[in-house]
Length: 493
Ligand SMILES: Cc1cc2nc3c(=O)[nH]c(=O)nc-3n(C[C@H](O)[C@H](O)[C@H](O)COP(=O)(O)OP(=O)(O)OC[C@H]3O[C@@H](n4cnc5c(N)ncnc54)[C@H](O)[C@@H]3O)c2cc1C
Image (cartoon, rainbow, N blue to C red; front, side, top):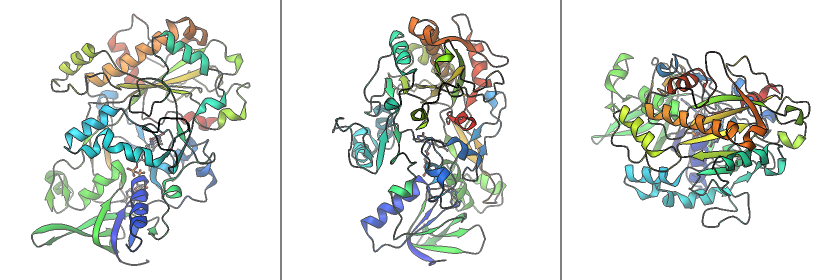
C-alpha cells in the first residue's frame, strides 16, 4: 500500500476517475492522489488495444457482465448490461463510437440544474478541448483539432452498401448531414470512432496517471463519513477486505460508474432509509433519490435479407473480405430523427405525462444503425453468413425511469439493476416510429428495395408493414430488445 492518506481519494478508475485524477495532478503536481480500481491494468493487453474488435472483450473478466432484474415491460426478460472492469473502466471494452448529443439535451440539463456550464455552449469548450476532429477543415467553432481523442470515420473503408443506403435514406426524406457532432444531429451522418493509430483509446492512455498512485484489483466497500462540527464529511474509504482504510485530506470522489456508484453510496449509509435498513446498514443521511431515476436507451433489433448477398455486402460472406472493412465497427452511418409531435404528445398523454414540452419538441428521439452483419441474438433464423444485415433503432430520449438497489450489504454482490425499460407509451411510440421509418427506407423506396429483399422476423413477431398494429410492433420490442452494444456479433466472425 503506497500511503494511507491522500489529498484526493478516487473510487473507481474508469473513464471519469482517470480523467479526474490526471487533470487534478497536472493542474497541481504537489497534490497526492490515489485511484482505487476494482479491475486490472490492461495497458499491455493486445486484445484490448486492438481497435477493430471489442465484442470478444464482453466475454472476459473485463466486463462486470450484469443482468437486469426481469423487465416487466419486456416479457420479464433480463437484459445483459455490460460495464467495464479495468483501469480505464468502460473505455477498455466499449465500441468507441464518438457521438456528441443534441444541443437541446445539454440545454435542458443546464436548465434543470440552473447552471449554464451544463448547457451546450457551457460544455462546448470541453468538447473542443478533448478532440482531434477527423476533418482538419471542419468548423473551428464546433470542433477541436489537437485534443487527446483522435477520430476516424468509416468513409475510407469503402463498404459496398454505403452509397446505396445513403440513397435509400434520401429517398425516404432523410438527408445527409456533414457533421453529427455539431449539436444538431438530425439526419444521416458519418459514424465517428475514436482511435489512436488504429488502436483503442483507453482513458489512462490519453489522460496519463503518472504522479498518481493507482491501486488495481482493489474493491472499495464504502466511504467513511464523520460528523465534523455538525457537518457530515467524507473522510476516508474502507476497502472490501473490511480492514484497509485510506484517508482523504481534501475529498473522496466516487466515480464507480452508473451502476456501482449508487451501491457504494448506499453501503456508506447514504440512500433511501427503508432500503438501507432492509440490509442492516446504518442510515447516515436519508437521501431517497440515491439509486432512483435510472434511464437507459434501449434499442430494438430487426434483420433484413439482402437482395444481392453475392456482392459481399455483410460479414460472413466469402466476398466481404477487404481487410479495410474490419478496421472498425461495420457501419457507415448513424441516422438521428425526430418523431411526429402530435403522436408523441398523444403517447405522453397516455402516460399521464402532460408536462413534457421538452421531450415533444423537434429533437433527437431515435437513432438508427444499419450494421453490415447478421447479429443473431435471440433469432435462430439468423446466421452470420453474409445474407442479412441487422438494424438497431435506439430510443434516445427515454421517459421510462428505473432504479439501482443493493442486493445485500456485500460490496462484491452485483447491484440490482432495473432500468424499467419501455415502461412508457412515449418510449414504445418512439421505437415503433423508428421501425416504421426503416420499413419506408427498405420497402417503399426503389433504392431501398435494391438493397433489401424482405424483413426476416423472429419467432412470434410480424414483419413491419402498413398493416401491422402497434401491438404487433410492441411485441417486436418485447422479444428483440437490446442494450446498446449491438455490434457484438462481430465476435463470431
Ligand atoms: C460494451 C460497451 C460499449 C459502449 N460503447 C460506447 C460507444 O460506442 N460510445 C460511447 O460514447 N459510449 C459507449 N459506452 C459507454 C461509455 O463507455 C460509458 O458511458 C463511460 O465509459 C462511463 O464512464 P464512467 O466513468 O461513468 O464509468 P466506467 O468507465 O464504467 O468506470 C467505472 C469504474 O469503476 C470501477 N468500480 C466500480 N465499483 C467499484 C468499487 N466498489 N471499487 C473500485 N472500483 C470500482 C469499475 O471497475 C470501473 O472501472 C459503452 C459501454 C459499454 C459497456
